Image (cartoon, rainbow, N blue to C red; front, side, top):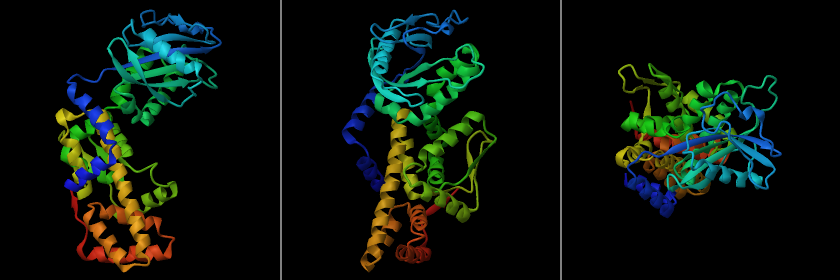
Length: 388
């Protein structure tokens, strides 16, 4: 446990994270979150479709062309207070005038609003409707903004927010504002930010099995559950995996190797309301990190949970790189070979690390022989793993 605490501290940007964590602790209120959708028209001419039949939608007929700018922003829908929406519009106008927005590529910044009196993180993205033969009532270029938490916090969820915007594109082409678009806009925080927090609350100590499954690329099947929980588990596994941090070729080989080695699928059954896991495995590394999640104050902050998950992955990568370095040294040093053995036995994650480096060194005879010797050593005592 002390080793895991040390690794967590080392993998964090200490001062900045302590400051942000302190701010989260001082606030007992739920994180405020808002959305805003604009028509965007280059050339300063507002689109006719800005005047929709939704007369009661906030600002649906309001158009504002920033002075001196060759574009217009027309409000389609928002849950921001009416008095502060122009402040966000000015913020977005500055970004657009700098040419700092590209279609489909979300950006994250910080915007100061007079109500609430605070600085909020702001994810914003330009959406272009291309090749649509039958445009819907709201088809045009749009700018969407999601506000909540801090700039650093939202940046951790950039990929999830990009996916939420991709789903929004389809709804803008074919959907209705009241029944399709507005519900999707208002659900951005619930669908993109909160899944990790919900998984921590739901699984508690059993979350160690999910962390191990994510690192080992084990298939997880969810039964007798609602759709939101299934999606939460899928998103958690994706967020906790090393995809994007390990080379693509290694990733594919690792997935195949893990599948062949385990020949089993983890089942998460919600028949009794709470998750019951079968065929699941965990190790000391995952159990130590699980403790950091479930010991968070008052359920913790979704942004801090995500930061901890990133630190968890960072530590796994650091340990794998350390092991690879020791293996290179062990090719010509018996002492380094012994250090490899001790490292695998003591790190708490030896079962997964050895499998990872075995895949990477499969085509390197000298390193592969070192891995083979390590496997033989380990087989005598085995790794400390636990099953569900």
